[in-house]
Image 1 (cartoon, rainbow, N blue to C red):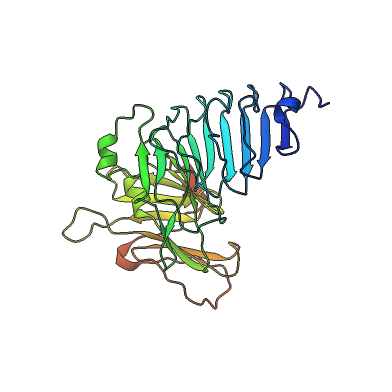
Image 2 (cartoon, rainbow, N blue to C red):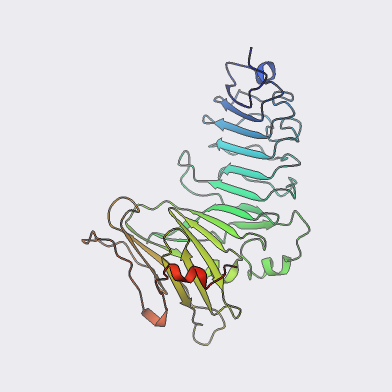
Length: 324
């Protein structure tokens, strides 16, 4: 008999039926479902559970699983791990869901309602199954925080997956024209963006101009870094500083010749070793390609190509600048 004060519980679904053991005090429930025949049923997850974690590693279920009949409205945080085969076509999320973490093999169909309470979406990079990302990633307009797997080309350059992003208006958002014209590549309210990427080389680049000019992101998380972004009123320059190390600077953008668009910008990262212990950062209008690095000392390099300014900012700036 489980104690009545238990708040966190994990269960192997094949061994134990959760409806027989989950007490009303349980707020976080983790279920392991291995075989496709492990089928969740209405009542297995009792009302009162607020955080639900589902693990599947041997294929998707044979019946509808992500529905309001099976997942109660009390769930505000849902994490789906595994699911290395696509789910069935129809998905209905809990009505009060706020945070969703999903495998990129899970797609939200356009016919499935997305609750306007959803503010945080985390896309999981899952090496199990096919290596290619999904053809479509649906992003609701109610989000304020997003974790996204970036696209990669063969030069180890990473960028927003603009071709597969589909923005869904789930909260009467009024910026549909900006989305259709691609002036905004992410929902207007997304201010925190975490980059997931699969790099195999010590030199790689993250395309920055799309994030600066076509999103409202002010907090960019990349591995050990958490960059704060503050744009100038005319959008011709921006401040870009890591909040933990204070490495960063002010970057002036340039327009492309005979065009109104800005030149491309890349955050170039070089690792001297197998971790982020020793590294260099620079911002340039061209990416770096993988090269053999002989140097092993810590360096913060400035790339002055095309008059792009990347100034190292010290602690004194904290008393001068106000973050957006």
